[in-house]
Amino acid sequence: MNLHEYQGKSILKSFGVGIQEGIVVDNAAEAVAAAEKLTEETGTSWYVVKAQIHAGGRGKGIVTETQSNGVVLAKGLEHVEEKVKGILGGHLVTAQTSAEGKKVNKVLIAQDVYYPGESEPSEIYMSVLMNRERGRNIIMYSTEGGMDIEAVAEKTPHLIFTEEIDPRVGLQGFQARRIAFNLGLSGQAFKEMTKFVVALYNAYVGCDASMFEINPVLKTSDNKIIAVDAKVTLDENSLFRHPDYAAMRDKTEEDPTEVEAGEAGLNYVKLDGNVGCMVNGAGLAMATMDIIKYSGGSPANFLDVGGTANAERVEKAFRIILKDPNVKAILINIFGGIVRCDRVAQGVVDAYKNMGSIPVPIIVRLQGTNAEEAKKLIDESGLNVHSAVLLQEAADKVKEVLA
Image 1 (cartoon, rainbow, N blue to C red):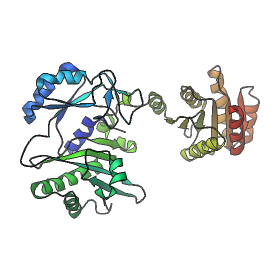
Image 2 (image 1 turned 180 degrees about the vertical axis):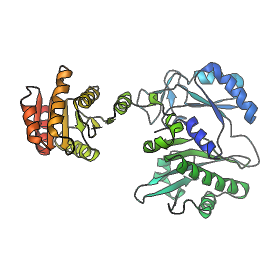
Image 3 (image 1 turned 30 degrees about the vertical axis):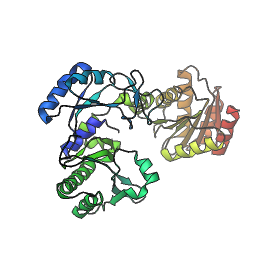
Image 4 (image 1 turned 120 degrees about the vertical axis):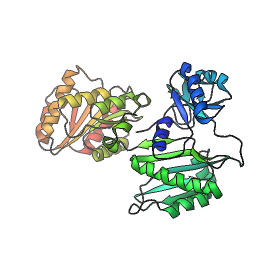
């Protein structure tokens, strides 16, 4: 589950991570009051106005309605409302959004942390994530903060460092110090960075995150270390332990069809193809998508109906798949183990009849318990449904109906 910047920062702060302070608002009228409150709390007189959407590259992104960037600086209270109006309610297009962009429903009024002082501020990249190849958490960091890490990796890979964490002992003090040393820090900034790294890793583990990305981490002119941004992704499988984090979910940032499928207990991910898939089991779903591609089609979705493929569930899956206008055929691939194939077949027939008609051909491949009875049910239904026994046979029928 992705979080907004302001939500991620609130989690970081709760674990003792230094952050750029800010107040989130959803209308321009509240923005000036928020800025005044921020001045009282931090002493800042300039304010950074940040669009809150689930996408990176906001600073370079453009709000289509006003041509404003997604992150702007208000040099005084008198400019705050104007800057907020240039972003709030508009559609922000970045390198990580569609051409239509994402509507900005909230903005963060944040303190200016690039103030003059005894030394020059510097930006650092830092992330915590799982190295799946090694099965261990790593801290990835670079002196090249504020830039796209992909560009840094391509052009100057020697400037990217990683620290692997042994799960038996967790992050060790010498590792936090090594990170600060590799970043070229010394004195008070060195001490602050070691504290920052420890608190950041504790936050990552403590909230069951799958990724933290802080770009940039700022060494301020007075040698404080703070998170200026926060891209946080939480492991959805752990949200039962964190109801307060689960409440942070912003469904307006997600695909509405995927939200609807999730509420119906279906695992659905929209893709760009022309063949809808309805399968029980994630592994079988992946194999089904492969065979569709091999047969000349392209999967339009990943959809796992789980182990209860009854008429109601199948009908809901049909309706979700058919919301995609690109779907030209539907392949249902069910392995009947605990679930009997004849019950699934009856569910398909009942769902078809309940919906009145389905405008695309359906290929049903049922294998396992009572597969023969299931095939007979499909063949004798009189509906525009093609039955198959072998997966290759199903693939050939997909190719046939798409021709």
